[in-house]
Length: 362
Image 1 (tube, rainbow, N blue to C red):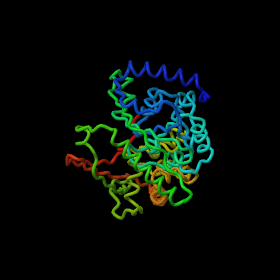
Image 2 (image 1 turned 60 degrees about the vertical axis):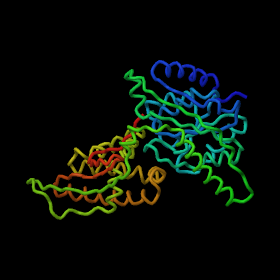
Image 3 (image 1 turned 135 degrees about the vertical axis):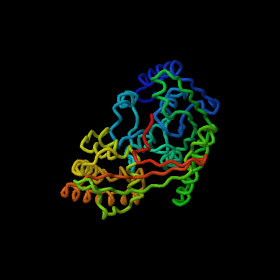
Image 4 (image 1 turned 180 degrees about the vertical axis):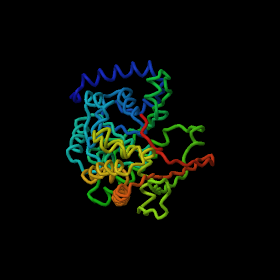
């Protein structure tokens, strides 16, 4: 039985391989580990967007992808994704519809492509969501680990005709996650398989000595505010906003705001992303109000990405910041937000940032 959209996916693969040859220098190894036929689940690390293309065009089988279904697709890649067709999943929820669709692919002998870290909002989280192991356990499908490297920024380099040199390394097949009559044993098997899967993927990513020197080994966040009176003097008694470390983290991760105005088109939130240059508390407060309404409506958005405890602290801090904006506007103060991120790299170098410093790279 042919997969959904078989002919358009076949055309996508043929075109993709041609573009890969022309615009990149991609090395693929380990194809001998790929089963002769499905079912199997192909999994890989997800640091950018290029891994999806590499998986789809280089595996010898048509791949059914599981992808983001809780956030509107990025306009740049949305048309391609909709053309290819994928199984949308609402991340942060138990999406039974998506799980059933994925299970059906495997039960008919198909190939499922999944990136178990759950998104590229922050590079290399290294932790797997349990869905892959659960699907393997339910269907008896083995897992094919793949390690992708040199993919961050590859799209931009390819567009500039720099021919990025990427690698795709396929590892030995993992057996299906064992099933059991015991709920505790099933849960334990899923947890162990998820950890093993990520270890296998990590082992397939070749070391990069140059990148190792720049690897971040430690980072710290703080948050403070400066208020300036109309005469230019600084206010000494500045309100303390709670959970400054979490707010510092929030303001440095640009995607947490970018998705609101870029993907959801709630452009009223965009000024808040420019906090480093804006000093008008009324303008910042209006933008924060739009962002807060979004986070309070889409309760899983921050919780899925940051954990619900940290998401709750950030929301409380943002509500307190809203009050500071309102008070400053009444008193005609100017305001500066100073979220500081300090990083220490493996080579010992320390750097501090006050502008958004963690961004998505495709």
